Length: 301
Image (cartoon, rainbow, N blue to C red; front, side, top):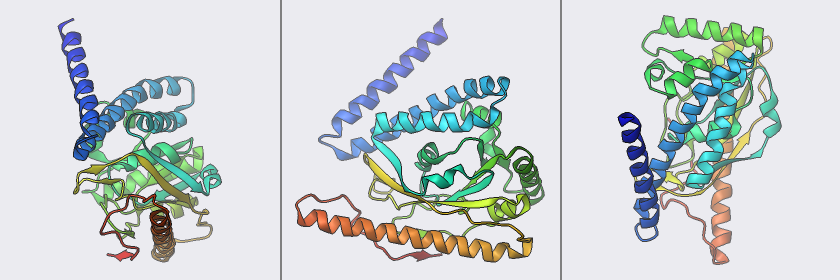
């Protein structure tokens, strides 16, 4: 009983602090940054806890492949209700039905977890660094729901994990989602970090299509450096599947380059569209928030 009392007190205090910061944000914009961060962590913890239960239930019912999809959807709606932030697919949603496939996307900040909540298809699992398996609730859910954990420090172990994933993709038509940049870019401009080739080797090995997902640069909505986290919509485009039929490991370099180039082109185009809308809205007296340093020039790194 004492534990439950402490837990209830802690949750109540957390909620009161979050609500208070939202209230303060009316006068102090930076308070909104902390309010939405706290709300996001609460949503992540709640949805991961739900995911542990859902994963066990779905596994017992023979639908383990739906575990990450159902939790992704719960996170999408929880975040939209509590923070007002959302990703919205503006084209190519039909390509998310491709199965099996290796889904890839640009990786900007921690908010990309919400991107997964929006675009994550049924019978798909993510890949994640091995250390996340030890995180309470989130790690438990990821383990139960079939996450492919990668030991980045051990190439041999990482390759074996991809071998197992490729076999599962072929036998169970299970898809996989990977961020090929390998880490968050925290980009303030329209660009991409260099791609790692694991996702492309996996796609060729499994004989599966690659489905690129492109989220516009959203530094205008979230910037940890500038302590800005606002409500708003982030646009997403799902590009047509890229076939790997008859490709060999020797083709991976060219496949990686072509896919990255096509995604970069879309990111730059989406930035230009935002800037054009900003100019049009400003001329009509309805400015759209954009970072002062934003540029439509691609960053090649």
